Each structure stands twice: as C-alpha cells, then as structure tokens.
Length: 114
Ligand SMILES: *[C@@H]1O[C@H](CO)[C@@H](O)[C@H](O)[C@H]1NC(C)=O
Ligand SMILES: *[C@@H]1O[C@H](CO)[C@@H](O)[C@H](O)[C@H]1NC(C)=O
Image (cartoon, rainbow, N blue to C red; front, side, top):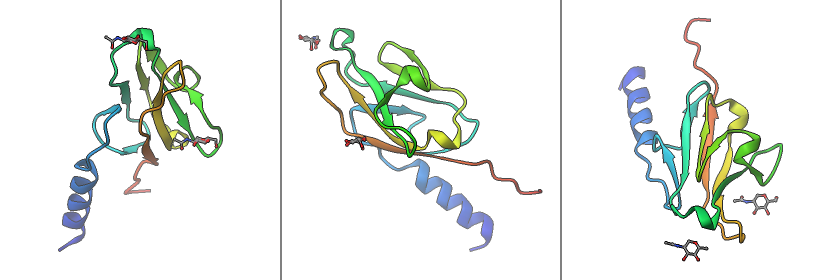
C-alpha cells in the first residue's frame, strides 16, 4: 500500500466508528479538523427535562454549551471547532441525570506544503 491508500483507509475507519446513544453527534464521527462545525443533540427531545450538553476539557470541567457553543433547545452547535474543543461531551438533565459520554478529538489543519 502506498501512503495515499493508507491515509484513505485510516480516514474511512475513523469516520465509520459507531458512537454510543444518548448524545447524537452530527456529522457522526469522533475525529474533527480545526475549522469544521459540529452539532451535538441530546436524544431525549423533552425540553421540560432540560437536557443540556456539557463537556470536560483539559482546561475546564463540566462547562455547559452556552460557554463554548451556541445552544438551541437541547442541541448545541460549535462553529468553528478549535483544537481546544477536544474533550469528553455528554448530556445532562436539570435533575442531574447524565447520558453516556463521547470523546471528540479536534486536530489541527494538515499543512501539506508549508
Ligand atoms: C418529560 O420530562 C418530564 C420531567 O423529567 C417528565 O415528567 C415527562 O414525563 C417527560 N415527558 C415525555 C413525553 O417524555
Ligand atoms: C468530568 O470531570 C469531572 C470533574 O473532574 C468528573 O467528576 C466527571 O466524571 C467527568 N465526566 C466525564 C464524563 O468524564
């Protein structure tokens, strides 16, 4: 295999990984490049339960969407993503119930010709 086919199969593998239920990530993947966008939705579509997306990063823990994204109901958008957005994300209800968490990794842009 040459370099390009190794790279292609690696990209196909990372984008086909199945994410656990609870928090829905769109596009459905766990690896992102800096500058791209992501939409995080809490599956439970029940606004009275007050589901919000929270995250832990290396800098801060348990911060909620309003501090690093744009929230719309139980959906949170990050536009654009930065490498500092790498962390563990989950949904939490007002009562403190938490969904399973998802690790999202944001890589710097690949600079082929620098
Ligand atoms: C929505 O959430 C509230 C509070 O947790 C609960 O009492 C209610 O039954 C839920 N409704 C639905 C349709 O899931
Ligand atoms: C987030 O960080 C807090 C405080 O360190 C920790 O208690 C919690 O388990 C972490 N949550 C996840 C989903 O990693």
